[in-house]
Amino acid sequence: MPLRLQSTPRVGGGSAFFVRRSHTMQKLWPFIYGAVAILFVVIGYSSLAPAHTANTNADWIFVSITFVATSLFPVLSLTISRKRGVERFERPSFSRSPSGTLQSIRLYLVSAVGFAIGSALALPSTDQKGVMLFWFHAALAAGLFTGERLAYRIYANRIA
Image (cartoon, rainbow, N blue to C red):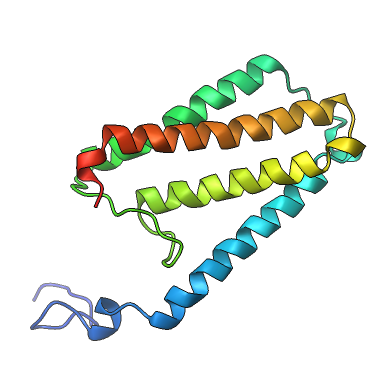
C-alpha cells in the first residue's frame, strides 16, 4: 500500500479550509506589512549610529555593485522560478501572505525602503561612514525598485 498523508482526502481536491481565503487575514496582512515597514525604519535609523558604523568600510564601488546586483535580483528570481515550472506569477498584494516570487520581492522592497527612510532620518547625527551606509541603503532600495519594474516588463505576459 503506498504511503499517503492522512490529511489528504480520497475524493475531491482538498478541504474547504485551504481553498477559501480568510477575510480576517486579508484585513490583517496590511497591518503586518505596515509593522514590518516601521520596524525596518527603526532598524535603519539605529544602524547609522556611530557605534555601529565604526567597523564599516562602504565605498562608491560597493554602493554601485549593490545597485546593479539588486536590480538583477528580481529578474533572476523570476527566471529561476520559470525554469522550475512556474507558468504564471501572481501579482503582489498587501492583503495576502508573502508566498510566491513577486510577493516575496515586494516584501523585500518594502523592507529596503524602510531601511533607507530610517537611515535618511539619522543622517544629521551620523559620521562619514554612516553617510556611505545611507547611500548603500538607498542603492539597495532603488535597485530593488528598478529590478521589480524590469521584471514586470520582461515577464509582463506571465503576471496574472
